[in-house]
Length: 207
Image 1 (tube, rainbow, N blue to C red):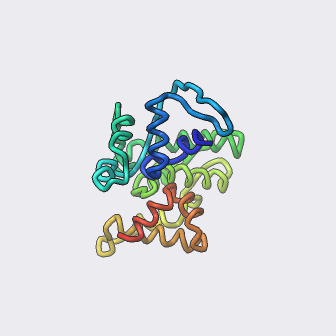
Image 2 (image 1 turned 135 degrees about the vertical axis):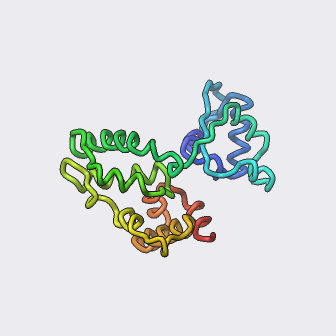
Image 3 (image 1 turned 135 degrees about the horizontal axis):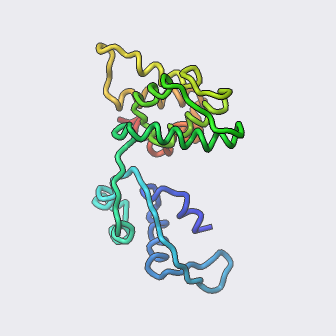
């Protein structure tokens, strides 16, 4: 059960208690299974990801410095999707294959117009939001994903005039509020649709 928690939880959201247990596992290279009387040795490699600034969290004493250095032997800074739009078509192809096989038993295609809409959007929910949108589009379409199969907020974002342009954080907040209304303020469901966690929703709404 403990290993399941470590596997699924974003490291930046881990409580200090979970951080302490994970640090002990990494230091001693052993775990005690639930109900077991003795520890089992393990040989694992940890890949941890977070959108949080862990160095700031260390300063605020919400993240353990010793665990930070245990985890950051090799540190990779991945830019948000809006800063690497060239990856969108590759990711779309991957998701089309995955969900096309799952739902339609075949590889699906996307029109150039629909791909353009995806490439112009700023993706506040990053890759998980893109995956979620492609998954829904696959379910809705027959053989080819077109603009009509994409959510309205993506198409709306392309029609803003220069007079109505707003900062990205304002657009993100408006979109999150729209998703919350559509899910009857169910933050868990909204987080799933957006591809972010509940904590991030609270942070963006408070900006």
